[in-house]
Amino acid sequence: MEVYYTFCFLAAVSVFLGFLNQYVLRAQTTIAITAGALALSLLVTGLGKLGIVELRDWADQLLPLLNLEDLLLKGMLGFLLFAGSLHIDLLALRNQRLEIGLLAVLGTLISTFVVGALLYWFLQLLGMQVALVYCLLFGALISPTDPIAVLAIIKSLKAPEQVSIQVEGESLFNDGFGIVVFAVIYALAFEGGEPSLPAVAHLFAVEAIGGVVLGLLIGGLFHWLICCTNDHSLELLLTLVIPTAGFSLANLLGVSGALAMVVSGIIIGNFTRERGFSRVSQHELDNFWSITEDFMNGLLFLLVGLFLITIDLRSFDYLLMAAGIVIVLLARTLAVTVPFTILKRFRRYHPYTERILIWGGLRGGLALALAMSIPAGYAVIQGQDLRHLWVVMTYGVVLFSIVVQGSTIAPLIRRSREFAEPETAVEPA
Figure (cartoon, rainbow, N blue to C red):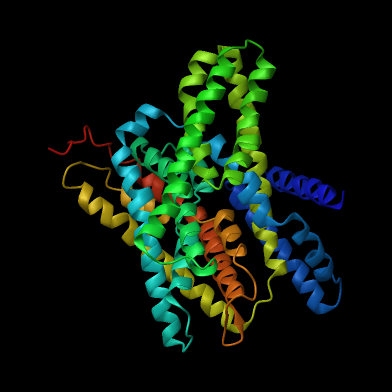
């Protein structure tokens, strides 16, 4: 019951911080919750060092009980991706399929390898002999964007529709694809996999293609079930089974649960919504999943902020954090500009598209959970555990992206509204 009580009290704290934000900061909710949790972490750490109130030991015992890695990767992620994909307009997605596909696949691969190469070079300069595969592993875990916070800002400020669709579509699909890339490199680094093209292709096919196929099967099954009933409560309960039992099934089968949830969510949101739900139940569907998404986002970002309490930061760690932020921003710039350099030969885009995509590519709890999944003590570099190094760098990047990038992108979006959308896109010949 201790885990349950901890979960309940932290959930209450996240809701309370969201409530205070209305009257104090008036910032985007997830940014405010992260900043509030970070301030709370610093306060707890400071009071402990002054000997006034020692809460560090209590926090060290309490927070690991929730197991952020399992809580997100094997639980909350299914809800967040399913809820997000419910609102995707398939027609708009189809019109932007080339952009979203290149950003989610090519962009993620570019970011993974650029981050890995730059990190390998930087650590070599410091005299740290870290294998390239471990640097690529960090590139894979930090490359998927998690723009939950910035999406709310984009929608509330009425960002250009073309940009909004690209940011939302990329965030959902590169989460799924990024986890697949991470799983492949993780297998090569820690599970004795052979770094051969057939081995990599097999791992990718099982994870990615298997996830998409399972998502189609789950979406099709629950589309049929929902269309067969007129009970509003049962309809909502059936949608709830998808990110619970459906996501668990994907994990048990060893396929990408993230991609399965995105695919099934698109099916439910675009086909089942119109054919299986009445107007009243459509409203209930939107409210139910909007509240669920807000609740889980608030809890997730609270945990991200509180995670600072459990990290023993040393002077060298701050250098790693700063280097990680610069490296990831450089990689993100290339991951966006390279695909758009190709696309601009055939299509016209809003002048602020690339800037918003680059600065709005936030990292969040997903990256932190992936970093925590690295086994402790497996690789020790000059007396430092690889897991600790990657967790520290990830945390620095996540905090910077949420607090700094998330809170400063609003002026960029406001300026983008001064320019009209491109009238039509010119399709490739």
